[in-house]
Every structure is written in structure tokens, then in C-alpha cells.
Image 1 (cartoon, rainbow, N blue to C red):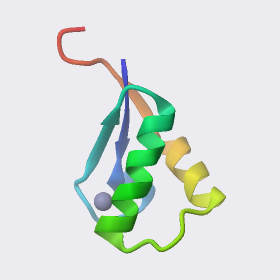
Image 2 (image 1 turned 90 degrees about the horizontal axis):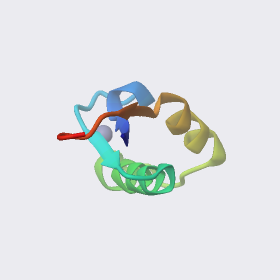
Image 3 (image 1 turned 120 degrees about the horizontal axis):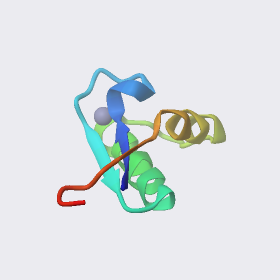
Length: 63
Ligand SMILES: [Zn+2]
């Protein structure tokens, strides 16, 4: 399984999907994406909580 975050679920009008092996990595990538793609200046604990709440687990290809 891998961690998957759909950017749209966080509240952005965006088709971006973040996939990572660990929750930590997924959060990091999501924060980076929010900064670079959506101009989010600060990733607050609230944002992290929101991202965590929409994070899903999906099977990897071949798994
Ligand atoms: Zn996005």
C-alpha cells in the first residue's frame, strides 16, 4: 500500500495527486506541492491535520 493524497480533497481546485511510501513522505510532498503550486506560504498544523484527514491508502501497482 502507498499513501495517496488527492489535492482536491484538501480543498484546492487541482487534479494533483501525491503518492508516497510513508505518511511522513506524503506530508512533505503535499506541503511542497501546496507551496509551489498554490502559493501556500506557511504549512500550519491545521493544514497538516487537513492533509492527514484526506490521506488514503491505495494498493501499489503489482501489489
Ligand atoms: Zn494542487
